[in-house]
Amino acid sequence: MQLRFIRSPELRGIVGLVLIILVIAFVLAAVSGSLEQWFGITWFSGKRVLDKIVYVSGASEKTSLYTIDPDGTNSRQLTNKVSVVSAPAISPSGRRIVFLGMRNGGVQVFSVGARGGSPRQLTGSELPKDYPAFRPDEKNVSYIAGGRVYEADLRGQGASVVLPTRELEHAAIAQRDKIPSYSQYAWSPTGQSIVAVTQTEDDNDVLVRLPIPDGSAQAFPGPPGARVKIEGISFADAADVLAVSTTIDETSTVLVIDFQKEKSAPVMMSKEGSFGRPALSADARIVAVPVRPVEGEEGGKLVWANAGSGEQKSIEGNFEGAAFSPKGDKILAVQTDKDGKRDIVIIGPETSDLRKLTNDGKVVSAIWSPASE
Image 1 (cartoon, rainbow, N blue to C red):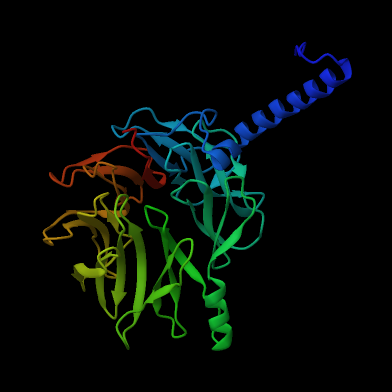
Image 2: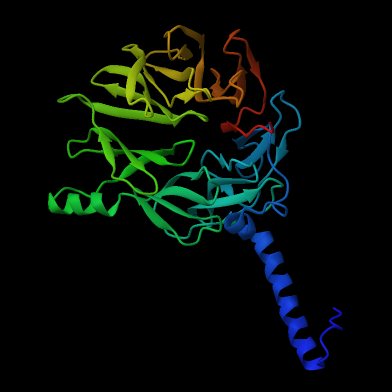
């Protein structure tokens, strides 16, 4: 490194050493993702997973992450050395994927880049974990551990509790109630709020919404005296609208809650089966949900409905994990056949056509990656 404009040899040596250290620090920050997290610099973040499906399959020695094109071609394994034990979540830019994995007998949150390879472990506690995800601004990852919702930086460091808030904890202690514990959560598409599911003292499920970064948590309890079980929640990708699958007494209901307009409405109701986790199209126009048959009976189906008019369509089969494509023109799901084989299928909401994408029969879960447009 030439520093001829500095006359003193000793000073040139010191400045050269400092520059070398800065270059090394810059490279390390780029590799670790810190440049992207701190300054939004993505030049060194590498490949992205776009316009694909990311899925979990037990087709290899360990249950692993794979990508596949929406036409069923170009399947590629992303992970090894770690058994994947949860549905993955993809960062909004498509640069990283987080998931729960098992290594050395313990379940932890891991991340892997779009190129795949050896996953990076982000957590280390022995608390039971669930629902790894990215905050929509992509600066933090979040997850449930021991019933609390945490978020940490992209390296898993600096973990802090999002829910319960100190206000909720203090209120529970003052009223001699149990401290709230959360079973699932979802970020709003802007990241300005988080919605989670907790339980009351009489074991009824309750929705809690917390504005971010400042605000008080607001609870949305069910009807007085009713038994409430929330099966799943899901936000639309481009609207502050939430779909909720719930069973109130013996009636299964899918609600759509528009937080901006401060209104909610039931879209589907049934006493002939229970609803699974719902999915909303990006514009919140259509909601899709798997329907499980009543215990002891055969059958099942996937139902989708216009959230405004309530007009419904359905297709028979045992489905789970419904998800709309970014454009809303396809519904992704995992279908289990009569022999117990599980594969990825895509359904056209307009035509009800079903296309099978995999044939190994060992798919666990699948999600859409972000779109390139």
